[in-house]
Length: 284
Image 1: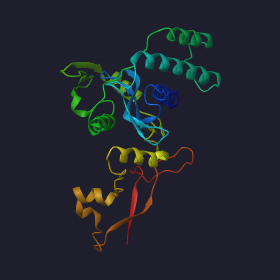
Image 2: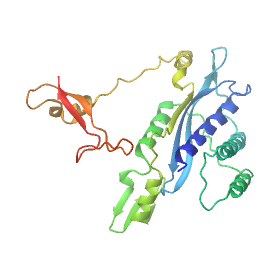
Image 3: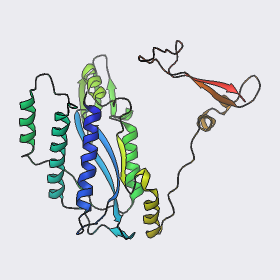
Image 4: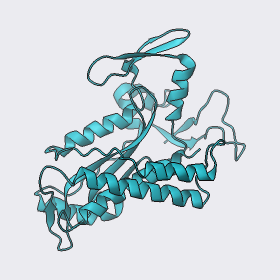
């Protein structure tokens, strides 16, 4: 129920923590580029909401010069932990006061405030990794992690009529067995609601900062930002089934003339039987 709200709060507070520390003149004195991704799972498929932030190794200062990160780490762990904790607590309180946050049925308003106060006295978990030389490798790792979802097929080792056995280990094989109902329930916890934006870009990587990003790239001896060519469905099909892009009757390439949406409760429009957002193709 609170999925989109809490995911947004977590990403924004992560961003603001990084910006707050990096804007310090003793560090970068400017905002770096951030690619932030929200994850809600751990290897056992249990709920474990957290954010991964891929941060550029420097920033563009007000003079238009590249300011690199000093040392192996972006900033001290303790400072990030305390600032992040304060921003999260404050954001949750404001969301509750505005009526945006829905509490569990068995939790009162005072119990929620007491919980936040208790969490505010604890040491939170913030992990900061060393500066990494090859940014492409980090970006590729994060992209694969996102694409794979909560669990990849190869990690599911056995499925019976009653149970699912899967690998929940990190570096070594570690099998976990769950009843099918519980496994499905855990998996469905991590299915985001429609239109939830769980990967965001900030600072130098924001959509509105392309000019600044190109200035930074030039200062580092890199080419301007390149954008891949938009892939159309015909290109994809040509690689796997090239004959399916041609009309079997006239031999001309097929084109999209209409997309039938799936069933929509709001508009009461339904697709024809057996279709799920079917694409209707016509001829040139």
